[in-house]
Image (tube, rainbow, N blue to C red; front, top):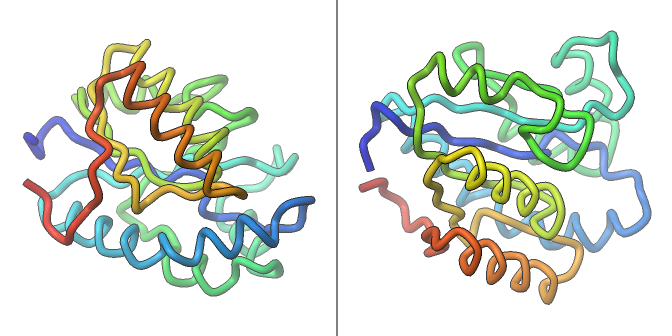
Length: 180
């Protein structure tokens, strides 16, 4: 992995968790917080850009700090504080499941000269899956560490990982503390 052309995407981890199925997603997300935190730390040590791609929850006029404050009032408060974006990181609002659909993500990646993405986050069987599909269609290579993705149900999370791997031939091995 060439750090000069790689970016880490953290998908929908800034989340109020106030929807049907949120309790199950919350329980499964707890397990991926530490691996994502460690992956983010490893990426920053190698000067890999960190990009948050997040639902806007209908907050079209607010900035990302206002969205974070809003989400801190929900169940995900603990991990939001742990994974809160830092000043040198990017934050992109998305209106739908894919991080590419209706966003400036592709333009940012072009500006950063990125051609390889590491995808992490929730919901694995929706937003990470859709972003992985578009990542592949846009011509980027990708890695989706299986211990950095969660869904409401483990069965669907595993199915999404299988689909991502089968369709894109990407690496889905766990993050084990160090980047290559």
